[in-house]
Image (cartoon, rainbow, N blue to C red; front, side, top):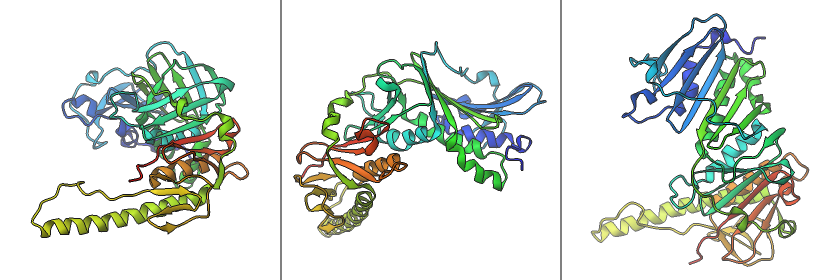
Length: 393
């Protein structure tokens, strides 16, 4: 059974893989195109918005060397511009100072659970990316925060050399676009049976490289037919001292241990209930204002929403949903934030015995709540989240 079928792959399929990397700014026409380069043994397609660049390469022997530009939006139309107008995209600007080989599963977890809690609009700190550190024991730590919650993922790489410079903040979109491109590349040109086998793409490995100012991620298929490479400049700026809001391990090893799946399901139910209640309350408020002859602005009406964590369990708007959590003062959390953190902790710890058990540390109504996977609590690879409470007024 042929699961690679390189001869059946078309250029539009390759362009579709890198389309998310192309610029949507009409003032830079060349950046809205994808550069297709044919060599004697490969076909590569590159797109960039000058911040993040993505390249997919297909092994195609016997092709005459040439270059063309294709409109990324259509994936079919050949652009009338000269390929020389496309900016040069290097594999890595500057000398490599560190690299690590990560499982594709870990990169996907960074994209799903860490990169999603960043704040690209922050001006005081470099919150628009994921901080990558390599502390002791050879593990990597990926940290993301938007100021209201913090997610940290500790990873054990298959191999590593060197350390990224202090404060190496990778743009959050690098991980999400890379994962999307790899999934698409793994399925290009495959028949139905091959597409099923391509679901094992997360068994592959990713090479993460750092220079002083840039980061690169590279993935290749098991047969070596297709490869994906993404590069970007590191974000300049200062990342918060995230360890200051994380308790020492001695304080995390004795939290209240809860059933993470039940807590996450409860929080999701609260999100639905409060959303419906908010819609009903907002509709009633708008109707009342209209009856008074007043006009309202979008977002003017506010409806309280939150999940209360206390000795009586987890509740939202008077709806009891799980058994008692711990004997602590009540603290009000955003249910969506709590669900995201608990679900991530359950997934990361799910491969271990009792992986659904999640540590929950609550001190007082004004302090942040710490949510940790079992592996993190014992000092190994795992997940940690810190969620700030909501105002109780």
